[in-house]
Length: 192
Ligand SMILES: Nc1ncnc2c1ncn2[C@@H]1O[C@H](COP(=O)(O)OP(=O)(O)O)[C@@H](O)[C@H]1O
Ligand SMILES: [Mg+2]
Image (cartoon, rainbow, N blue to C red):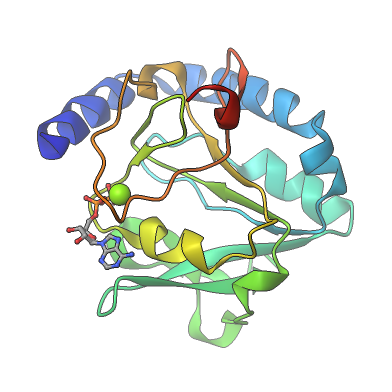
């Protein structure tokens, strides 16, 4: 069931054109940058968009220009875990890694303890309003999110086409606290 839902959601997202992705990603960032969570965060984990994920390029530019620290995930396929590495220079630090996602080159891997993060922004395939996520099927974020300090806000960026009524969940699925779409800011705690 999760598998067919994942496929259906990926299909819908793949139908968005470049202009729609750009415009909706801009709206999402407009909402995000006005939140206290974003304004108060100094050590932010962000993904680098691939396929048709909500684009984070403008967020990265904004954070770098305001002197905040950005951390990106590096996948470890063997253990299906994420290493968090500081991104200092997007021009020099990155290469296409596993799954076709941009990841830090070997020399630019600067791992940190996930406990230092004060905002974690996650991508996904689909989400329901209670924060449960359909990912790509690796369970990477389900393993990663429980390692955060309990006070660290977790937030998904998603297009409206990625929102579903109820994500199928197993005991290991780990929800996010907030979701920002091009239409609204969802505080998942108020939705269950
Ligand atoms: N915390 C965890 N510990 C061990 N295995 C996990 C954990 N979280 C997820 N998994 C495993 O990862 C696999 C993929 O999880 P799933 O939730 O289907 O993927 P995704 O979250 O990427 O959509 C599952 O088969 C599950 O057994
Ligand atoms: Mg999961």
